[in-house]
Length: 532
Image 1: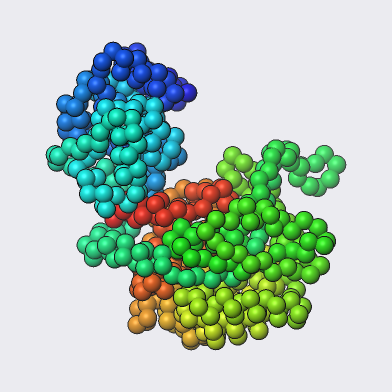
Image 2: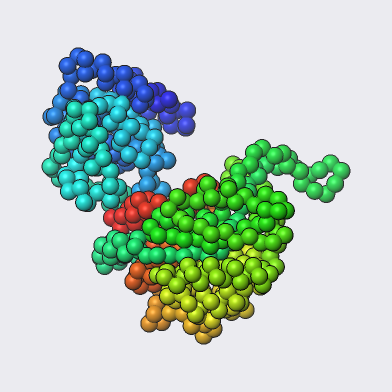
């Protein structure tokens, strides 16, 4: 409950910074805010509501709040809780506790509350303001990438209130934080400065619009990613093994299912063809996978005879999400000819009208050379990732594809492909891979080092990584791939596609497992934050 702020001294601050009682009384939980505002309305008071993140409060905010206060005699501010702030890397810069304390310390502010949602709707329902005040930048509804301002206007009007706008000097908190409190090293800062000057933001917006209308087919194995959280106990007293105490577990829809969910963030027409186990021999988890698949994604499951759905169980230390051990359950032999025939009939029927075919080749037996021949000859735009993992390392290399319009592999997969673990990554992308296969767009990802992009004219561009403090890297490469691919199919140059892939990867490394998937809004906001 946020009606009472935790004293800052409890988290290591000096006691002089503990909010005084007046400030504490201004900070009200959202459920209590409803009762407070009901009482104020009965007293004939006029209530004004402002909503935002208020991460770095500046003169533009102060002028906005002063202008808002002129509409009534009670000013309420609602802020977005930390976990719902989709403004890019390491945002918010200040926690909700610090943001509420600062705002409540302003004399012109009467109450501050926190909204645990990514819109102002809960605050509007609780406060039912006479005036809901937004900045001038929201006056043109078509400029609101959230698409929520129209709904918020209708909501406030349903309570008899009014949406109004202030007109004064405005500043961007994100721009000020980027400029004066940079989160990136100098090379990344220079790269982003160059992008800002190029006007790439407008181009990305146009590309996202075109990507949304693509018809996309995605092909690849479904994977059940199971996390078993354990507390290591130490060495067994009588054997040379490490013991651990099991605490809890989670199960995620991974593999091509996770990739399809990420893809659905920017493409409206997505169809998945995926491989699951044989229902006659045990649990296929097919219902589990369908339930977790985005509702907009159409799916066809191919069943592996006498084999399970691929499951990867990771034993994880929960505090830092450190993976200790992994167990595979799978049958990775090639599919029988009759099953391949059925699969290929479905594949041909689906890809013949597709603008983009994305292949997430996890190397677990779904995609044979016959499948590759169909994909290469019948796909209008073919994007391929051939993944190396513990179950196939050295056996699932990208060069088994002779042709593609876009390939995306990581640095290790590149070293394996060129059979040289010391090869320069830029040289892999720019020279060695193009000598091995026909592909105009190549990206080799390199974790914290970013990615290396080969343009159609042969130039190699290094794009820095934007992510800080990875929580869990599982699925980040797949997210990169499936966001970059439709950007290329929509007409992007490879550098812009790589930039968008890096954005997707940076967001995904902040998510444990596949607890959630990308959304278009958070991608757009992340891009806007980087480019401000």
